[in-house]
Amino acid sequence: MEKFSKEEKHAQCIKEIRATLIAAALCCLWHIGTAFILNGKGLYFLGMPAWFSVSVFGTVVLSIVSVIILAKKVFKDFEYDEEEVE
Image: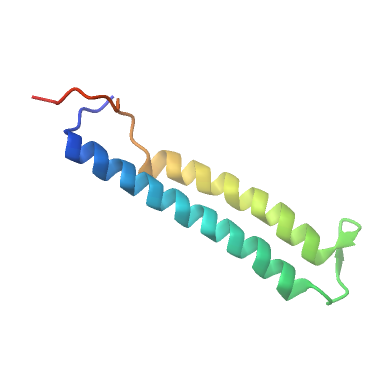
């Protein structure tokens, strides 16, 4: 577990929030974008319209990959309490 000052803890929290919001926005863009792009094309995948399959299953895969990347690259393990590091 890492030791941070109060300012460093705040900066890390902001960094984690921003990265999570970016990941969520990318998932939303994928979900909505592929649904609009593939709608009406007449393509089918797994017995369902391609827009539904690609949109839903792609969003699930993208969100899992995003969580793995966030956990490995962005998130840090620290205690967010009131004690200052001397």
